[in-house]
Length: 350
Image 1 (cartoon, helix red, strand yellow):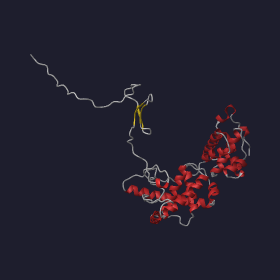
Image 2 (cartoon, rainbow, N blue to C red):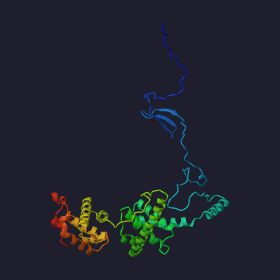
Image 3 (tube, rainbow, N blue to C red):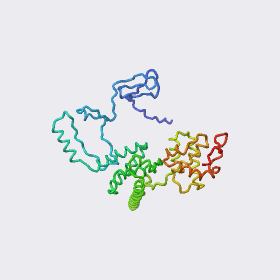
């Protein structure tokens, strides 16, 4: 008679794992929340406090090193490295207060002399002036940072020594605005920096050549080592200002609605294809397109009003408009004439 094989039973042992449940909700798994600020264990469903004196095991991001100065510094580490400044920026600073003895003040003065970096001081002064100019032109932060990076490249290479710092800053601002597609005219930068338009044009061309040559040298160096240069770090030569970008800003300054912006940009694009204003500056093209769009949609703006915003004379606007008026039927999409939106007969002949 065959006997059945018996499997050995597992030896009994006590389960020492503790499971915490909410006695009101009795959810499994429990919805528990640790509130380190109060040191409580709370049910996330009903809010019942299930435990207290919870120990916060996270990192302590607090320092009391400046308590003797009466200031609050809830930081465990210093600032991160700033790519816009020179050096490793890993030096130690000896602090002192007015109530401290003379020895700490002498140590602070001696430490400042030993770690004094003239290059960093020059860059900080230039960045302060640059930031003031960018704020005056209402430029976004990314344009300001790009301008600082371009200026640092010029400063590190010791280029354009015969040029004033304000002239180099004006050229860097002009290039950064074009790269981020928020172009500013020579006239606008001249009004703020007091650098002549001719000088801005000259430094702009020189900076373009300098950055292009520097980018080519860096690319060659990377390719020799078998690498490939990222597009993010490469310098892209700027193109001529697009009139459509100016249309949006000028319409906004004139208080025109979004429909005028859309129509004027469409006219500017078709004008480029037709070639009616070939050789004209982007300023006069944008101004003439806004002049036509404002009359078509029933909120006409005079050439004088547009010239105050665009920075070109009203005679230039009229001459540019005369060139695109014969092509009005090709430039204006029929959808703008449907349901009485616009009236092509309302366009002035001059």
